[in-house]
Length: 362
Ligand SMILES: *[C@@H]1O[C@H](CO)[C@@H](O)[C@H](O)[C@H]1NC(C)=O
Ligand SMILES: *[C@@H]1O[C@H](CO)[C@@H](O)[C@H](O)[C@H]1NC(C)=O
Ligand SMILES: *[C@@H]1O[C@H](CO)[C@@H](O)[C@H](O)[C@H]1NC(C)=O
Ligand SMILES: *[C@@H]1O[C@H](CO)[C@@H](O)[C@H](O)[C@H]1NC(C)=O
Ligand SMILES: *[C@@H]1O[C@H](CO)[C@@H](O)[C@H](O)[C@H]1NC(C)=O
Ligand SMILES: *[C@@H]1O[C@H](CO)[C@@H](O)[C@H](O)[C@H]1NC(C)=O
Ligand SMILES: *[C@@H]1O[C@H](CO)[C@@H](O)[C@H](O)[C@H]1NC(C)=O
Ligand SMILES: *[C@@H]1O[C@H](CO)[C@@H](O)[C@H](O)[C@H]1NC(C)=O
Ligand SMILES: *[C@@H]1O[C@H](CO)[C@@H](O)[C@H](O)[C@H]1NC(C)=O
Image (cartoon, rainbow, N blue to C red; front, side):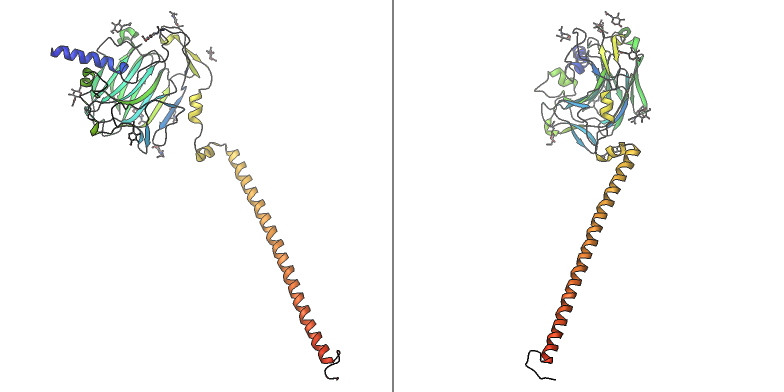
């Protein structure tokens, strides 16, 4: 009975990441022709989520991720919440370094995974009730029949501190690192002679869900997740500070050559990666300015100076004119006053000279 329960849990833990987490594929290239090409990263990039998440690069697939100065936040407030995002770009072998803090809380599952459209998968998973271990896992072509892929590793404070979770994925092997320590290495041959080895272009998927939500999950899942979630203890938040991604191939897009799901069948479509262009496109006025060539900056500064000089000249010209006008007015006033004064004098002289006939004749 006990052993049955354990193997049932083991089965579930093997099944879970691809059945309940953020696993889906719109077009399975193993049984469908004409699945869309996959945009390549085709280079490397660092994403700082303390600022914002570029929604052309990070697509929301469920709920809503938020942002704080600490990073992108994935929060479960209540039953049914499961915010997730995924990268619009794919890596065809590559390296991903994720700086994150997993969410606490019984039954809460934080996950940071790589996944392809034919359901190859490389996982980091955290059970909120287990503050001492991290789970690593992988899948090839959605094959969930074996129980020996998932492996747990002891580590310090995954829910209290930010750590660097790195996956380095080549044709020959996959390595999982926490900070400076390599926890695990999987060789191509070790994965059923490569048949279960992740080898098609994968994107990055970040998210959180509640395996301990008794409303939505079978008892086995709740048990695997560490027990029933008490939503009153929430909210439960996973925070991703930054992601560094490096594509080990250079392409504009990756295309499915045939339905084998082997790396040899993947075609590299030449051209400039749109994801990389979008990422490198400067955002914000300051960055746009910094991105301008020196000559353009000089030209803009010169024309601003030119403009300022012209405006200054216009103002100066107006002032001088104004002052001249003022002076002219003053002179006119003065002349007027002088005229009035001399008229008065003349009047007085006339008065006194008796010209108008009254006054004393001298
Ligand atoms: C392709 O395979 C997937 C996964 O096994 C399955 O869900 C889907 O129905 C299949 N589609 C076709 C067209 O056979
Ligand atoms: C890309 O990789 C190069 C070489 O390792 C490195 O100098 C550069 O900083 C990386 N770029 C980003 C955006 O991380
Ligand atoms: C985000 O973090 C990066 C790297 O630590 C830093 O350079 C940048 O100033 C931060 N941005 C904000 C808005 O805090
Ligand atoms: C959780 O609640 C906070 C605060 O009310 C809100 O900002 C956030 O969007 C909610 N998240 C989800 C997934 O509902
Ligand atoms: C955490 O996971 C490890 C490995 O499965 C297990 O040995 C340990 O008992 C778990 N701790 C808790 C508190 O669940
Ligand atoms: C799935 O994996 C199991 C165990 O590694 C293996 O026995 C089985 O043949 C695989 N199935 C396929 C379709 O490759
Ligand atoms: C993450 O850890 C890996 C492995 O130790 C290291 O090579 C890499 O520089 C680290 N990345 C960051 C962003 O700290
Ligand atoms: C699939 O494509 C690869 C690489 O071009 C080729 O070696 C293999 O024979 C093809 N398999 C099938 C079944 O078409
Ligand atoms: C991509 O470019 C390389 C070298 O220029 C060429 O050999 C290859 O055939 C091109 N691939 C495609 C799919 O056009």
